Image 1 (cartoon, rainbow, N blue to C red):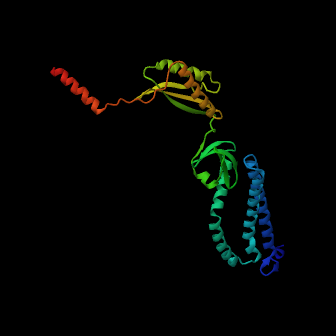
Image 2 (image 1 turned 90 degrees about the horizontal axis):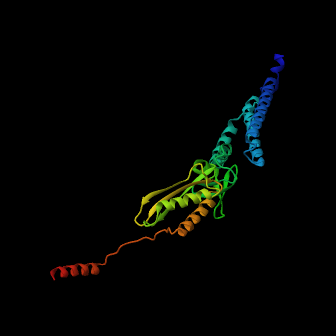
Image 3 (image 1 turned 135 degrees about the horizontal axis):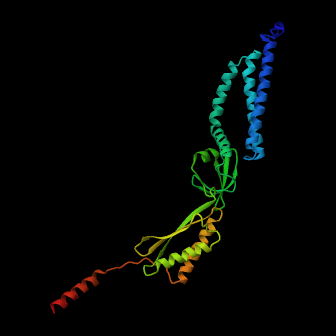
Length: 280
């Protein structure tokens, strides 16, 4: 048996070497199959099918290729020249594809972590809008103006992401100024009633309505309201208009800026007139 294993097929390559190569390649195939199967189960609901299959094929054949390169010396092949050429080629390709690899890796992390998903309203590095697509290399945002913006995944992954709808509820607030002559308590009661009557204004967390400051021209009432994240903008617009019209119906108005101006000539005339009156 030992003689058979040491039998040379060609050069210094023996039957044993060939068996080692076959075993290593079979083991690499099994490992590649297990890795891709587990990845498919993990990412099947998080990635598009075509993107997932492409990534799995790259990983599968990548593992087998690495194993094949590792067993070439056992077949009597000198890899020194190949390694030099491959090293130079790898450096060139590395610089050329650095951003592509970074976007690919970032895309995998984004799809796994899922900080955003299609349909979310987000702000990524100053680009605000709806998430239209999350690909392996890039993320597509449709801005509120209807523009489509492609953001590389590396930039998405390393930027601060504001997701406006990740939480079920979102708060907004107003600062409403009324005249000093108006009844602030009555204004607060009207605003609270309008909030209670609105079907999408949440009661928990509880809304807040209170006098916040006494301004130069007005008593400033702060209004803080929670609404479902999907409805908050329409609620904000509707309640603002309802508050304005209802306050006006009850004689409560938003004051205009007021300033008292003294004219120098008029002031001098008043002073001189008073002095003459004293002398007389």
